[in-house]
Length: 418
Image 1 (cartoon, rainbow, N blue to C red):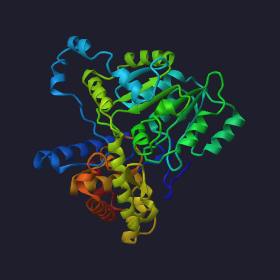
Image 2: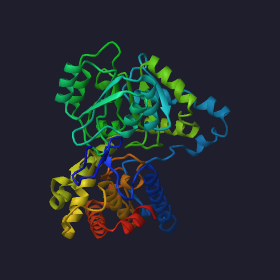
Image 3: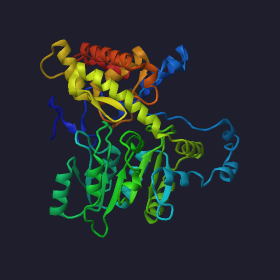
Image 4: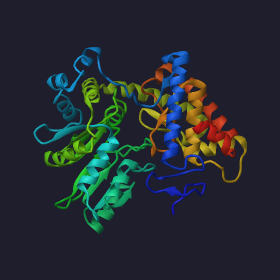
């Protein structure tokens, strides 16, 4: 069984090690809800300006006061909004209205689940391509397993090409251009993968949740302008105004089959969410992401003077892996031997400390189960409100607090779970 650098067994679904506190999904949900309550308490006591959102997300409703008048029931909703979001979705993802259809699903994870379990059968081959240093998202790995398909994952385009030549084309080529840890596949490598010779039933699926970062920071084409893609999904709230939803686009025949199951299982975006997505896509501004990237480049320069290359630029933000955060804290306190905590717990603790002490909200605190064990400091939407020095100081404090509980599981549990 694969292990991390500390000898902890890696869960093959989420691709990181569980720990004595965050043992699985139940505990990660508890940590997420605790962080939400911390935000709520701080806002009630000090106002919403006391929270600085460095999550890279907004997750707002995106609905105007005028629009709420038409959401009193489905009757005025159908008259005013039905069918209005899908054309915006096609445009947002660079799709061709004559060759593609769109669906608005309640989450990217839901889109991945329903799409992959619909198009895959037991024994089908899936080749997954993720960035070096990153991995496929659990929301794709889980449904592949549930469908009984066989996943082979790659983080090297050369290795993918070699396997493709030797083993033949798969049923699905699954590409995750930006991982949850904010590693990125160069565009030329994505296009090489999409150009590989396909079998008669091969489908190319782009899990492009972070498309806004690709477009805004890396200045790459939108999903369907990258290459020959059959199905793709992006997020309505990752560097987009929100609400949280999956913007799903693909070949009409595939979208029809997948869409039937979306409605059957109740995974379609509901009225307010559907309207909010339209506003988010209509108002999407890549320039905001470019500006966030400039601030991120300044921050990574500062953090690398203290932590070296362990602090890395993840597009319009800076990240440090949970493994590295754990090592940094150990070095600071002179610790030796295997720490009692796992990297996912270390990253979570630093994020919770930054939230408690400074009101800095990161995805490490409020992430859904299965998100990468990484301290992610995204400059969208509130990085400019804090500035580089205050963010760096808060991170330093969070790591120092982690050092105090490296081998005290009970105290660490209280901080993570309450």
